[in-house]
Amino acid sequence: MGLRHIFICAMICIPAYLVGSIPSGFLLIRKFMAKDIREHGSGNIGATNVRRLAGLKLGLATLMADAAKGALPVWMAWLFACPDEMPVFMASAVLAAFLGHLYPCFLKFKGGKGVSTAAGGFLVISPLGFLSALIVFFVGTVLTRRVSVGSLAASAALPFTVWWQSHSWVFTLAAGVVACFIIYRHTENITRLMAGKEPRF
Image (cartoon, rainbow, N blue to C red):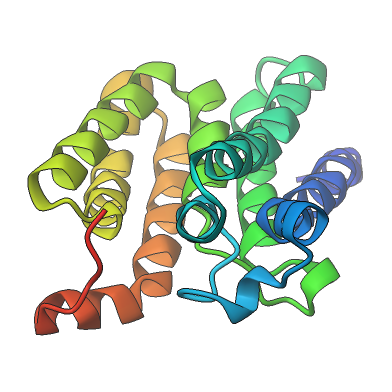
């Protein structure tokens, strides 16, 4: 990778990380309820915890905002990259935005689990791959009535559904990295699931 590619990648990844770092759920709860979402429920800043605390409307608003944080940088990378550079730059954009949500500079690098942000990014990268993983999410959630199960199942399926649609090792590798981080961030949920203590939807 030459200097030009490094420069373009940095120009994509730095803004993507900063966009991903915007703590949507934290800001919405602070604005409309004057509370710190991190001090309630699971302490997570994502849509599920926001819904539990503030209801469906703010939960959906958080979901859409977090998804947009992943979709916008990837779309911008697609817009400005040359065709032969596009997979690397789009994958870099989704990973930067995703890591921004997980480790936001605006909240001392303590963020959410990244499911919605990853979903937004892969909706742009691999629409059919995303929709297939979304079906897995809904099936897992409906059957168990636990969002965490749906999220874990969809994350595990994502690399396979992305490969099925794109046949791109770059996109599939990015999906695999995202899946590993999401599963890792659900460690406490997995522990509660094994103990039968995970809250139902």
